[in-house]
Length: 81
Image (cartoon, rainbow, N blue to C red):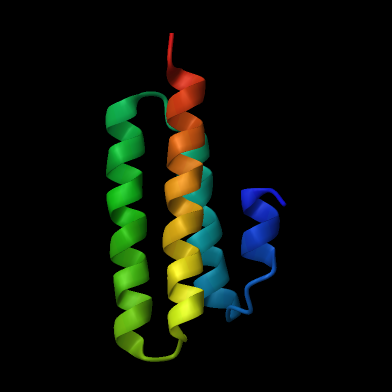
């Protein structure tokens, strides 16, 4: 299952889904390592906010962290010379 497919399996409200998808897309098209790191930090802040809202269970929050980490690692692998 690809990262995008894993995210699609999560039941997120439309506004949260839009933010998650936007952050993932930014990671996937980052032009360098520094930009990947910036967008990963932003994604983790987004997840922290979703967690603080109390509207998401622990497994959804964990799945988001894992998904963003995998997206960042994949992009960094693509950027390696």
